[in-house]
Amino acid sequence: MIQAVTESSFNVYINTEANRINTSVGSDKIRHLMKFTNDLDGSVQYVYSTTHFISERYTKMTFDYNTTQDVYTGATKLIPAGYYKYEAYEVSWTGAVAISAGNAPVTETDVLPVAPTHGIVQGLVAIGKMYVAEKSGTQQVQYTQHPEPSGSNYIYYGQ
Image 1 (cartoon, one colour):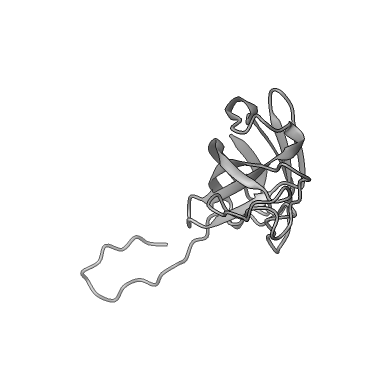
Image 2 (cartoon, helix red, strand yellow):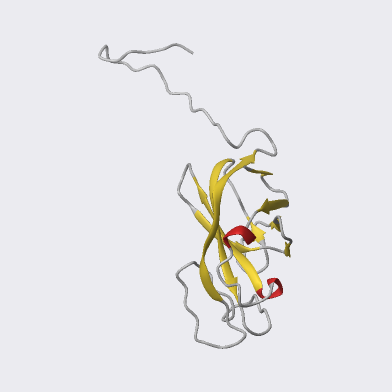
């Protein structure tokens, strides 16, 4: 399981090489598009990592917190705290890797025109759970106090 803290940068170490799809290009032509889905509200964020390192045993990716999420720069805003599902999609290039608008797919279903500098989503290579802890301690659970009902048809639990 990946663990992170809200409003902070975090590193991800996952095994992607065991499930590698496009073996006709080198590791330097591969990036991973991450999809983070919040279990609580169902919100989805797509993002490429700020740094990306592939070894035989794991892939290390770094993501930075920013109030404005950006799929291309690794800027994420994983709020609220809680559990997320992550999915890693392999994206490959035949020419120079260009993670920018018009050159890198922004979702797993995005198809770009064929060109050496346009990335192609090969498929899903990793899936799992991620826990994002609270930074300040007040974001995850908030209680609302309701006044005592005036009718007698309710079960009321005191303060």
